[in-house]
Image 1: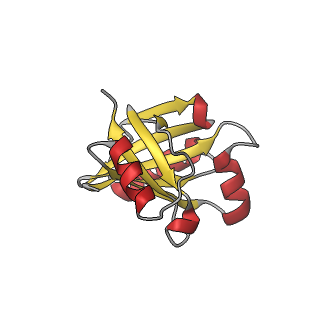
Image 2 (image 1 turned 90 degrees about the horizontal axis):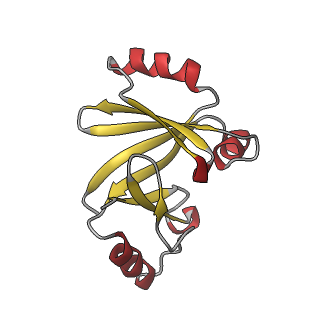
Length: 133
């Protein structure tokens, strides 16, 4: 892992959350994006050198909606940049880590992503991400 790429925060309502986070971070949301495959709408902020990603579910059955129902709004995941996501998945599998998805998929912000199962990372959903070529 190279560095923290972003921190994902689950929210119920982006329309309300974006202005609140703009005020909190003293910076503007620089991008919103719908990721149909993940059933989410995202909003990005740059705080120092770290990106913060707000995630709102598109449907009541979506992963983020289920997360909020179970745990409430808040930190959903931490994402780490890697140079080669396929190799990183293979390396971590050899170390005994379990993935939610072993095959990278397209995520927000032009990234290929894969998630460790939280049981492998002491309850923290951890994402590996690599810039799409």
